[in-house]
Length: 223
Ligand code: CTP
Ligand code: CA
Image 1 (tube, protein in one colour):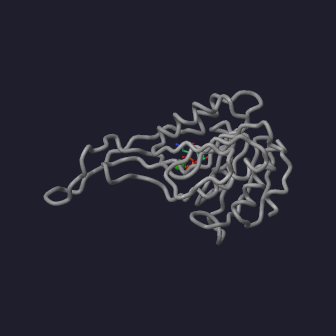
Image 2 (image 1 turned 120 degrees about the horizontal axis):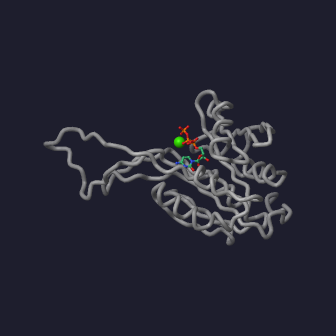
Image 3 (image 1 turned 180 degrees about the horizontal axis):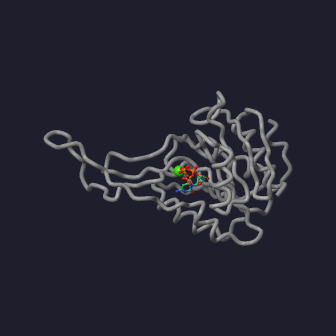
């Protein structure tokens, strides 16, 4: 298997990864969330671990398991829980990769019992902004730490990716192409372009998420 042939080039490094969606509760049986299977984040976790890293994988609700023994999974549900988990491990990590599809908004109130349909008007759900996990970590980043974000855009891809790179104080952003067939949600392949804060642009072909993960780790190491 070619993935086991890699050098231990992340030996002694700690890598923090977020993956999957977050769920923001409306009531005990309903939530607001994003389409995300978590496959990309889990692939990065496996790739980093296979190259010798100690991996902390902060995971939203997904249907995946980590295989490598040096991946520690911390399961969370909401964006707020994801932020709290990340803050515990960020200071001691060398590399943080923000792969999660974090819900941007959460209901202001979570109903304690199931919201009923019969005899009620359709509810209006008031939302508040969730914390920006990448931006919060970016503001605390120390010299030598590398922070990587993702962007999934439908329009003005490059401009939006560069804006996020700067505003979240990232060192690198991975732009996912939604236009390409075989890229994005639920697929096993991805087509990405990586932009770095020092001005590099690296386009890649469509490939398996595990091979995309290897490209991302290689780009991080080259920084
Ligand atoms: N991100 C995060 N916390 C959030 C929102 C986003 O950590 N509350 C991270 C994502 O994990 C990703 C990057 O920020 O690495 C960009 O996410 P994206 O949703 O594209 O950016 P937003 O800043 O939320 O902007 P918008 O959704 O309006 O495009
Ligand atoms: Ca968002």
